[in-house]
Length: 217
Image (cartoon, rainbow, N blue to C red; front, side, top):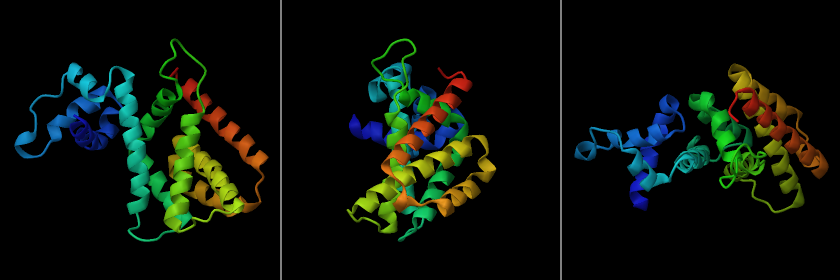
């Protein structure tokens, strides 16, 4: 069952631009199985639940698979050692095909699964997403030191990437130039922990504003 789910998740990812992070996208994955394994009809809703989870749990499974693939994409974008700047640009490129669906995806991840009604949003998924990208950008650049300055630099990169991704949602054509401007102005190793904490709070408030302005909660 686990192998089947993993295989179908990979086939679903190219369908997200058309169907969003939806159970419909997951259901259509079987239409794209190779050769004689391909189905002529999408999966039933019962089958989607059995393979990926009931209700919105299946959608969360798809979103997390897409995020995981984005990290892998950063590793493979250049095929060799790359810079932090190149890695972050590659991650923004990965977003481009699904920009219309990202606010809804992060809205869903930010709502605790155990809550009913309209609970307060949980900032951790958004911040963890940016932290993984900062980690991977440092990793592919070869910066794997354990000094304090590395941790401060990583935290600063979380804020930089988050701001660039937010900008990408509203002004996609200038997102890469905006990222360059943030990186050029960055004093990553000199930023204080308090500055990073305040900026992280700002990033989450901004995400929350976008989510609510689009009526997603």
